[in-house]
Image (cartoon, rainbow, N blue to C red; front, side):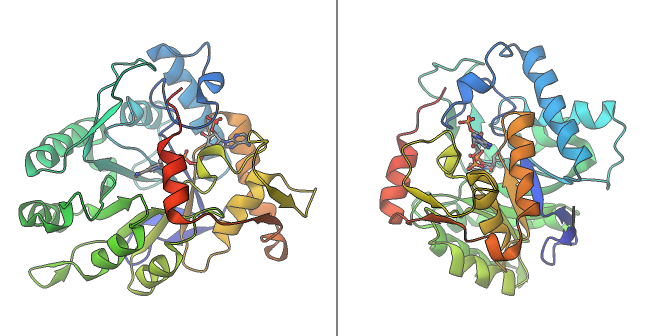
Amino acid sequence: MDLVPLGRSGLTVSRIGLGLAALGRPGYINLGHGEDVSGRRTVSGLRAHAASVLDAAYGAGVRYFDAARSYGRAEAFLAAWLDERRIEPGAVTIGSKWGYAYTAGWRTDAPVHEVKDHTLDTLDRQHAESVDVLGDRLDLYQIHSATEPGGVLDRRDVLHRLARLRSAGTAIGITTSGPGQAGVIRRCIEIEVDGVPLFDAVQATWNLLERSAGAALGEAGDAGLGVIVKEALANGRLTARNPGLPVVLRNAEHSADALAIAAALAQPWSHVILSGAATVEQLRSNLRALRVPAAAAGDLEVEAETPAEYWERRSRLPWT
Ligand SMILES: NC(=O)c1ccc[n+]([C@@H]2O[C@H](COP(=O)([O-])OP(=O)(O)OC[C@H]3O[C@@H](n4cnc5c(N)ncnc54)[C@H](OP(=O)(O)O)[C@@H]3O)[C@@H](O)[C@H]2O)c1
């Protein structure tokens, strides 16, 4: 798989990365997560399951892995796998995130799965936790889901601490979600601390149903930021698992998920597209996007939703 620079961050990524949101905890919000991990919901069962997906990803050339403090034990599973497989620091690029705490207690029916808090205290606590687990393998630390109403980009104390982490050698990024993604991305391009741009990378949702961040992501790429695409499959809605989606599949040779990821790969500003595969089979199917010829990247015809519609639907996905 091709490796490319993640903007001017100094980091290198594979064109497809692996996100661990579905692999570090028993519950997630995609369409059929419960079915994917059924029978493996103990800590040791999920750890072995995550290792099998990580092995398949690494074997296929995936070199970017995306975790978060709130993905249950994702950081710990990743760190254990890197140690067991003796993967040298520098052979892969590791991103993680702070700003949400995992509160589900290893249950799928918890009333609250994650709690958001973007204060300096949480940054300091979660950064110490991430470093405790990942050590100097932590290459990119991202604000988890920065939004305008959340106000994290106005907190000078947080921005100054992030600048200090950056000076110490960790690249700094944001992830964003919701109908206001484009505005958040544009603000990030402009933010400086002591005259130095703060952010090295942005991670945002772009898929055939929700393309509204595309222009802003192009501007971020032009400004030298790395661009990471998440939710390229709209949380499973752009896969064969969703029979209700009105799509025209003009190319029977490739699956819907491969074509949807190929469409994200074809965006000139995208550096790495995250696969959120919950199983080895899904990963293999997602990776087939690399074999879709450029001319066929538009062969999944999907009518885009308005951002308001899309994010309202996203907010209704259940945890399973
Ligand atoms: N705010 C943030 O920072 C944020 C938010 C979301 C995600 N992320 C990152 O982005 C990564 C990807 O996000 P995502 O997992 O939500 O997005 P996604 O790629 O849009 O959806 C992945 C899901 O699609 C389904 N799927 C994939 N391939 C399939 C196939 N061949 N057949 C049937 N179903 C298939 C699986 O869900 P089922 O459970 O239905 O099988 C899988 O978990 C995450 O792991 C995380 O690293 C970050």
